[in-house]
Image (cartoon, rainbow, N blue to C red; front, side, top):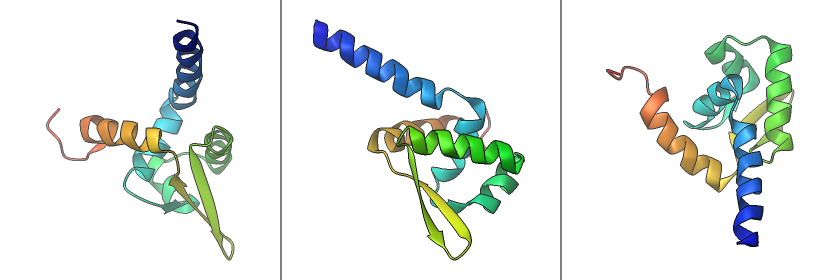
Length: 100
């Protein structure tokens, strides 16, 4: 039972990292593949400073990683659990053109 309680705390903290509308928008975009910061800003209409803060939080939580190509940063999801969760969330809520 103690292991379940510890795991429940870990999962709750993990989900707190995802439970933000701005971060979910970013992750919905990244669910389709790697994107650079400009693409994420265009897709989400977030201000650059806000985008930077949310990407920092996602990096801090080991949810996304980035690679640098010259002056451009490209982000992608680098967490198997998040990829699985975002697959479900993407198909249920993010896909464009659905009839919900």
